[in-house]
Image (cartoon, rainbow, N blue to C red):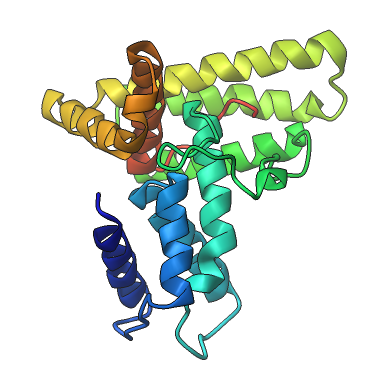
Length: 240
């Protein structure tokens, strides 16, 4: 995607998020957004970062003024770093080939090892919501019930789990995460699965030339999994 198209789509999306109020991406703002594109931030990743800023902004109460794109920079970079870790791509820009000047930002959003009880609590809330919505129904709801029951049992003892027992629980969370994704994937039709694979490939298009075919396919599978989670609003059960 040409840089002008990238910035134009960011500007259009920002306008929509600002209820139609036009906030131009020009001058220093254009340089900022151009920097995202040069760093290799996929357009959809940048849009999710903008969403994250607006979600936090809405929680503060009624908006007083339109949001400038500059305010979204930290959230865009945070979402980009999470995306990089999830799909296994290098922090090196596929365009300019240099390390991000914000490498110190590439740490866990939680600032260290996640709290296992807190993680299980968040997962259970999302699973309960998914169960209530009946996102896929039938066998999928049965799986959600079984996973939720197992996680609820794990949560009761997670605060006291240490050493090998903790590692076993973390391994089990990874298994449950895979089972949940597989069930969601099997509930999609062939056309939907193909469309998701194509969308994942498009999201990674800026990295393809710098990746081996094997690495690209692993990354595309990871992006497709994330797209499936977003479609059904499923949690990541595995502990990062």
